[in-house]
Image (cartoon, rainbow, N blue to C red; front, side):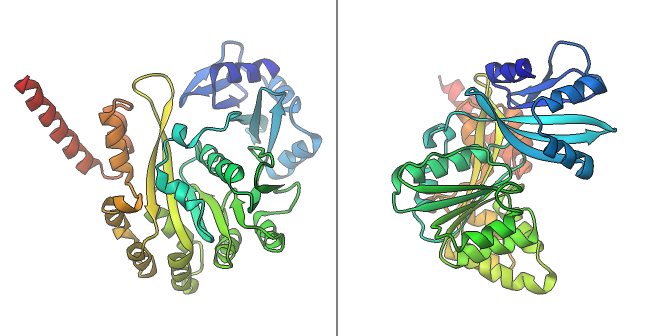
Length: 362
């Protein structure tokens, strides 16, 4: 196992998969690669699992079919581990947690997001599919707070804790679900009695947690949360639809007042060199967007984002086009990842025509 973990670190792999019937597999820059060697047997797969898993977690896998935890590979790296049963055998997925805190500029976020860190209260959501870089983005945002705001007590609630933050200017309390507290909702309720200024909710995965996060944002705290959604409109719909029908109108009213921003992101393979680049959609809650949320007209939010550049807003499709023009991502990625492929293809054709005219003039 040590050799596999060292390989992940040296190759910059984001994930390691172990399954019976094939050799260990790593993901590098979004692409899976088999590690040379024999296919894992049930015995070797279990041996690899036991080398990093406690008896308590093994018992949880037997009882519930899975367990999640984090562990450190010396000083080289930290990993988030998901152990599972698959066809009666043990399997694992290990995700490497970046050991270096990326700067705001390295992530590529606009300055409008940095301004959000000084809001006195409200809800800021960072969304995207699994493996889209949400952890890195949140870690960077929290590190900025930690380095610049000495009057802040920040509580994080995670399952498991991925990035350890040292006390700098801010006071930081990191609580791990199933270790320090039973669940997210309970941790949020307790957090309100622990004198927080900011609260990070690692995952808003159920109604009780979503409800507690909205309440915390309403009662004068700045709350960060994550969801596995893409785009601001879908995120707001996901939050609203988590509630019973008779409560959804009230929830829309609450969200229209407490929501500060939705930062949606995806990772795309680079075209200019090995690696991946982040693409973002940024929605800032303006009075106009608040009205759309309140009136259940989220389908019109994208139009407001398109015209909201002065507030720091940007659409995913606009971001993709900028990265394509800069030569950072391929044309196919722009089309495949866009929210409106038809419009994007028309813009790409206009760009091709303009470039052809320029070339003809030269």
